[in-house]
Length: 84
Image (cartoon, rainbow, N blue to C red; front, side):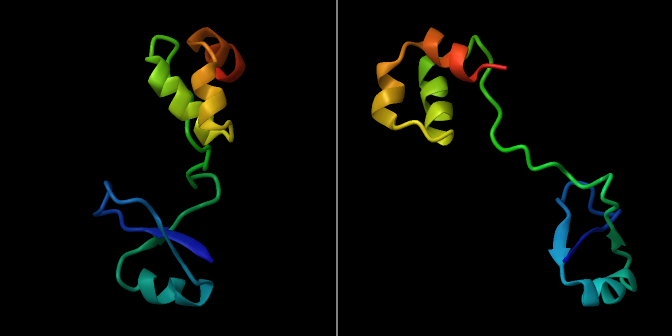
């Protein structure tokens, strides 16, 4: 699979296409993304330390903590565990 993008569509994320279709898309102006340019899939980012406890609970749940445990922790505990 290859990531391609169109320079006239800067707001659109690159799309993944089978390698065998890259040449066909290139004929229509699409360009292949170099590995250096590929967006890193870093997943959700932790909220700022000033964010609400609800934001921190949601982030903790996204990281695999049960909602019950996340809600039972203090905001400071969540920031200490998951903060940047």
